[in-house]
Image (cartoon, rainbow, N blue to C red; front, side):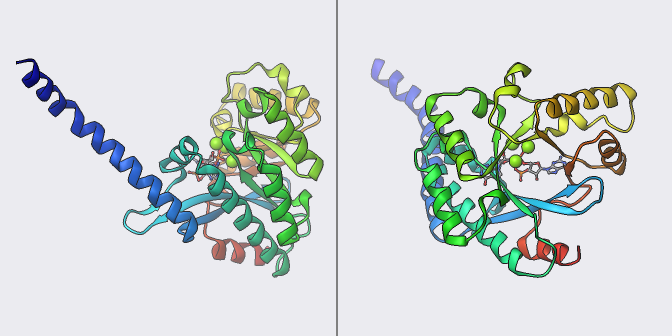
Length: 279
Ligand code: C2E
Ligand code: MG
Ligand code: MG
Ligand code: MG
């Protein structure tokens, strides 16, 4: 009877678990393959100088052009890549591809004098001893100036401050790369840390600017956030700008740069090149 029970419980639980594991195993294999065979693709979203509307840069956002499942978004594979360490190779691919693209645009038509490229990195990458070497290598290979690369990291990555994190951040800064806090305002940390971060730019999360344009309190709130960032000697970028009112209000409040569907969705490289050529 005990045996039968065991078997029946196995029958209930195992298939789902096994299936999930097999799916994950399959996806890991596929993701490794995807990096090797260039199934990954970068989309680019314009970053705009709010006072003039000029395109001052782009954020590189990765997608996976899956042979059967179509275009996958980062939240469908980045978490798995992080769990399995594949993110190191994936991040290296993204960095190299983004810098190659920047180089191509620098050589093409359009004003790219101070145009910069933003690349996202994850915790695992920051904690890898290879990161600085990878960055150095890619800059040397492509001939892009370090000052044209902005690396985006989240609040918690910059704050948690293990020795290896500090080593990476300091090393990157020493190369002349700019560092940016992404999704600012969604973290759980106190704001006092902001002063001591080796960071040049703060990107205000879209949840903080969503109510702009309708409400005076919202405006005062964003004004205070901007003041805080500026008081720390840092530059502000607002993300998730979807309306003309939000863009105008942010410009009035002295936010230097912005990004969002209002200015342009993330787009394929050739589309972005057209945009650049016309600017
Ligand atoms: P993120 O770095 O905060 O990027 C901004 C996300 O907001 C992008 O989603 C972008 O498409 C979206 N977005 C931009 N403007 C608007 C807007 O006006 N309204 C709304 N509702 N959304 C807007 P995406 O491309 O799906 O990327 C999601 C996240 O995946 C990124 O958030 C970033 O954390 C991560 N990610 C993307 N590419 C990479 C990568 O190459 N490496 C790593 N480690 N993470 C990446
Ligand atoms: Mg980002
Ligand atoms: Mg963000
Ligand atoms: Mg993010």
